[in-house]
Image 1 (cartoon, rainbow, N blue to C red):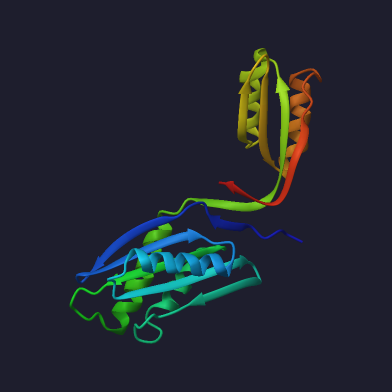
Image 2: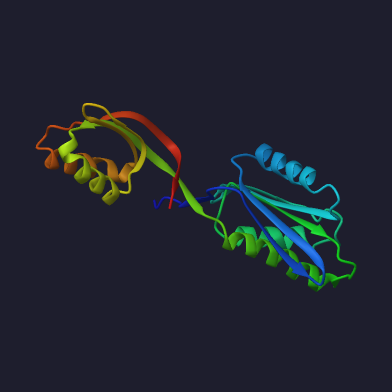
Length: 213
């Protein structure tokens, strides 16, 4: 059975569009739970107390096990939350929350105009999102002599390792995180490079690590 690719936003992003003098400010962030999503919505409301509307939408989870929510927050029914959520779901991201804050510009946009504006606001913020992946990882630690350090760095890069720490003492101690699928190949290649002198130890395993793409 093919594993679902679990994509999430790496960090919070904010963008703004102007539609007939109304400002639509979209704030997007990672959220691992409904509680985190609601906390983010509350935070944005506090940040913009004078705004006319705060339209939230979130998708928690991935695949068939997702929790979704949206609200029109006072806009005409179906013109704000639903289009915002539809665009968010179409992105393929999970564990994500977005809030579109509107400052009314004095001109009504009509039903179609609102649907387009809220959808476009979410599209704009999604265009700026850095994406990460939730996947199983293993963290290794090993000590290498200085003479091998540059080659070891290239080897880690070749296996998409995420270096967590490097300590330069008498020798170099490195802690690095790999996708599980890369671990054994890296260990084999490191053994070949060092003629068996450098032996990593496993210092952590996580079934849901955030791994930048």
